View 1: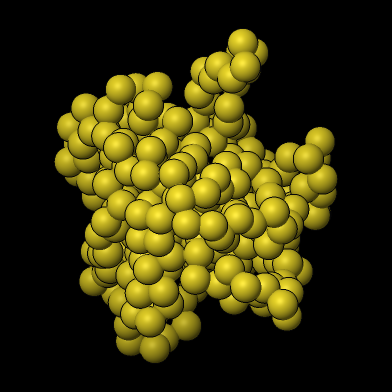
View 2: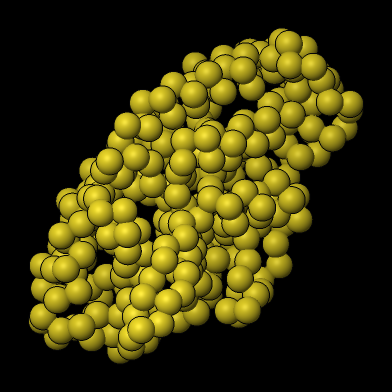
Length: 302
């Protein structure tokens, strides 16, 4: 009953998003292939075909672009067969560099929302668990920061939540990551190695988490595409106001995703110092650069 944590990120370009989010969805290995098959069926049922044939990808920021909501609402909701027919016309016109017709824009917008809603439903049906850590987009590394070779605090918390989940389920987990920029990927992996090899806490967590991430191209991996959609929705539609996470949401994304995210985030029964409490899979970290301890073998945050 091992798990795969399929990870992605949002807001790391620090351009237009309120937060920087890293995380993903954990699926049991025996659920992986049924989930992939269901995602492929959902894509075809939503759009009439797979988007890769038209040079498009299932990305959260594209599926949930403001224009998609505008297009979807400009006419009455279409029946499934009508939506697929008009959506295919939209995609084929795009390939020919032609301007789609009004009702074809409507169909494509409705197909995008149908896909997003279906992704959340499939994640629940396949018993996925969501993990994510969030920092403000304005967070900047101090000039005198000396721990750049080690995992940032929010990333430590992410792996802590995943470890606690695996420990509670008495199983083990792998990490699957979206392949982005090779040098940045290499730096992140090196930080992971140092954490899991050189800290006592990391050593412990390596007993459940295999600290050797596997990289895949997101356009060929449905679980990573689902993670991308989830992480984007966390950035724009999920808030923990009691923890100071109070940036404005996009109300359209919040309405589509907030309830789902509350249901899907991991929930772990914890006991510490004779105190029982629930630990949640989504955590906000206001300052990812404070309270670091780089001592070899020393205790890490999280």
